[in-house]
Image (cartoon, rainbow, N blue to C red):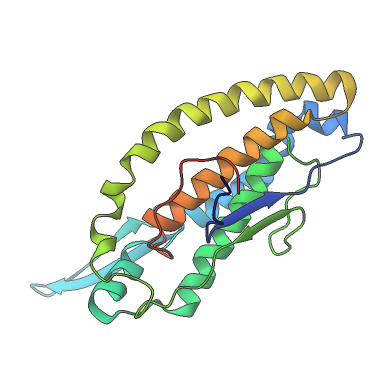
Length: 213
């Protein structure tokens, strides 16, 4: 039976060529600068200042993983809106994280760009918060997605094994086996759909339990 397309899609161009064996061998080191940059986005802080008894106090709160969750949730629940710039921020941070992930997981030997799509293509449609999203569902999406969290844990363990095998394959042959490539991309696709549903709240359509588009 044909499966219907899910609104969130991730695809990566298969590197049907000889990959750079040196940078692949040293990927854990070559990825450090871009991981630091991604960490800078993840570590942005929010600060709050208030006065009490003539004294001013400032507290800083970590910004989580760089994706906006609570703000869109509140806007959807109370205003039935999803500000476009919040959507753009979330999708761009998620796309950047996917490019870094593709590089770290040996899916490409092209260094990740901060502002170019390159070989990693992420599609997350902009939601119509008033007509297309249930205003109360964001309150429980994190709970509804628990089965996905459990399955993704085991799938990511499989990704670790696949990357180790791919690392040796690239070192000896210069090629990334297509089966390993498809599995790693499939897990990333699954994870992005769960993020779009339960974290950045761009869709109410429950993520499918599949690796394929």
